[in-house]
Length: 280
Image 1 (tube, rainbow, N blue to C red):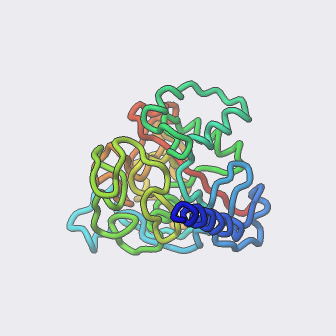
Image 2 (tube, rainbow, N blue to C red; image 1 turned 120 degrees about the vertical axis):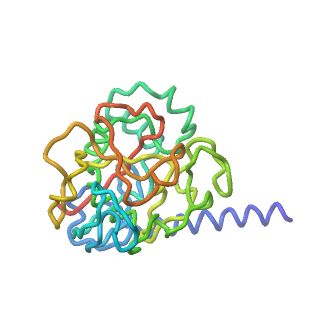
């Protein structure tokens, strides 16, 4: 009897998940976003769930109202952004495999990937910025700008240190290369293993670093346009955000900025990405 009840519960759970997915609009290209105001969509090509990030303005960087001293390279400044959709999770190993298999893209680091992201529902790692752009373009999406990434990571919260608030523990995210609390993974964790932020996005702090579209310039905030900034016109490094499983708490701050060479398949074993889409 107990076994029968367990099967019934599993079937009901599966039905509820499927029913939730059915509420999302399935979109095949950015052109189809015109006029759509759904809070959630499913991108047909990679089956990625995406959340609407509403248009708005925010203080990007760290506020001097809250911190006694702020490094100039992440000093707070006001930014206004148009709405866009963002993948609710980092691109997974399974999604990247699909891309490689269907597109014929050349990729040769699978033996390294499996050591730290061992299954299809784990975040894709060992990807260069060039790899992520190739994936994004093939899927009909793009990488987020640095401003879009931080705005989305904040999840509607104002002047908070992390995507969930001002404090951090191992119940919030995968960080610090240790097993503690809800963090039960030595390396990468399956995507969406921790609670989502206010926009329904998972792992905006910890698990893996995420590539952004922008060139990196530590002085860019002092000259950044106030509306829809795209980053510097040129550079040697590309922006990465969000921290990772093998970095400390400072790297998980929503304002923390990092960078790497765009051709590197990130030897630090913790570089990944997620995509965005907007109306054409």
